[in-house]
Image 1: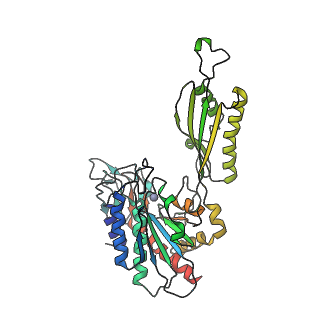
Image 2 (image 1 turned 120 degrees about the vertical axis):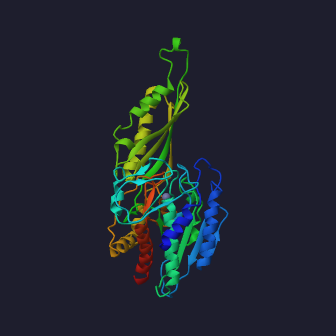
Image 3 (image 1 turned 30 degrees about the vertical axis):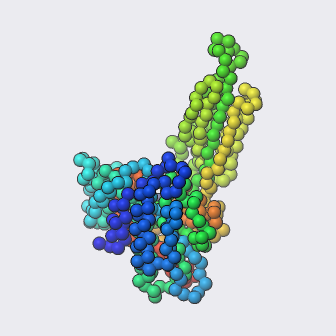
Length: 410
Ligand SMILES: [Zn+2]
């Protein structure tokens, strides 16, 4: 069994499911401590320095420089929690060696199959080793594959002091899946010049672009009178809300967009009544200008309605959630280019697609730590069809080491 697989199998068996509905504490669930404490012990045993697990379950450590050459401090991050969306308790990984390209029975559920008919990516791994679930849980390759790969790379460098490198910082963080964990990460104390998250999917994935994102709360105030005497007086908040929504472009909805196309997504309506109606929207676009146009379109729609029904009928409150990290990576584009070079030197075709969502790296980039995202070898995250490819995990370990070497030799 390979070292990275050995770690991975050890970590996935520990339930670390986070909880998106707990807003007032980090970590959101106590189970995340179980893995954090195990990793803390393992990092110390490996011989990493400054191993620190703080009161919010952020685990950091240092691989000290072994050369006097002045080199940047490089960070590597992965998250320890698994998705709140699916059971993470009692993970029983199945190891499929020399995969034959056929259906894989997930043995914990009678009749359940992981099939290349449904998931054609499986066919890329014929003859290789796959790790699947037994159908009753998620696997947790998101992101325990990233955790295993970073630690395996550090172990390799510790065992090979002839490979010269600068100071390396690693971090294992809670509550990525709730979107909130990383807001508590101490970027300054981490002290890296730039970093990489290992939290992507298939071989070659390199992500440095994500959505600009905001959330809009639209509140409509109606005027309720007895419907019998309503003529010329009644303003039905629900109907005005529908009118507002109809002014947003239909083709710019998530179900009609892909690639670099942004959208307005009506997430939820609430308090529907004659007196008041509310809607919550997500606004998304990779392009900063198009993103601003989308926000402005919502305000313009509100202005029109307010002229039609009277000032104050509609209020639009827009809150920024995160920004496209590309803006922050462009001035330090060597961070992306070096990763691309590492992939190419290892014979891996880089796959660069804009993320239709956010990553921890997006927030970190905006807080001064430019952080693109690298592949880990996991697929079908957040559910029972999740699987990982061991050969890709080993490649990810090599990519980490190669990036470090490239910076030494620059
Ligand atoms: Zn993840």
